[in-house]
Image (cartoon, rainbow, N blue to C red):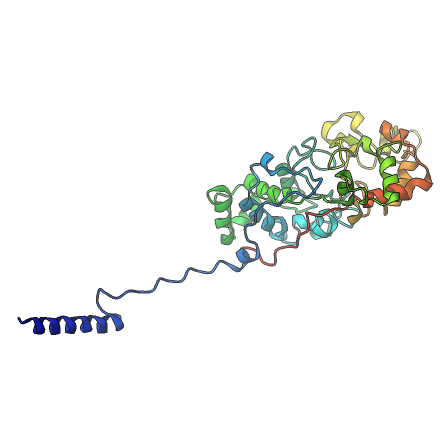
Length: 371
């Protein structure tokens, strides 16, 4: 074959291959890669986010709680707000721990499934992963944030479910499986994992950078003169800091502060005057009758009414209670009896409490949940 004929044959073969490729035929055809599937709408609504930077004054230290990971927080955020974990699908953790109320509530006591009203108010969930002592609930019956998350699920007047019932519900939601896998390494369901994910989300509900925190960090202008007077009283002769201490303003201990006790009928022992036994129901120690855990004072203005039973509508009522040194309950805490401040000093104490409102916990419920 001459050189010219060889070139013409090669060009003809190249043209034929080009035609075949354009028609999508032959082994030389290149198919475009399939587009990656879009994530579910609920995933786009609740992406994995980095752990938050603790605000000024918060005791949060995520290095000390390595079980809190972004993947668990994302899963726990769904679970915290998902009412399907309750027996009738109407109550979630957030029903009583509402973000806009500092993860407490604006009712005297909590309401659960079928409108059942409890006898205690939901305490706030702020900076909760770093307590002085690991005790949770008003009576301290849970020893960890994870155990605390389990309790309401099977309480008959709260979420009214069982742990097995919660797991059956979640097992029927196929959309949750990949997120358990991402958070824990596989998609196995058990109640400890459910509770740990909820606790991880709760651990990111922080409070700090309040006016008090800025003042304590050296900003002399952060507190008003009235709030500074209240600060001196709080840490001084009003003796508030005897129980409300540390960065979270709670000693994580149990005290009878003269709330929920009335003189019993004639002939009955004084202990019969308690409407709620408090810590005694857990320890059976008579010294714990009427004792309840000291609540945090962070963001306290966001969730009136106050006390474990929601019996005081305003902070002024609370201060008036302490100014008269509580009611004469049998186990009244000594520091309550020793408190010294006048009715005219109550506005200063309230101004200081208002200066404990901070930032770091704001959130809104997910719009959609795994299906």
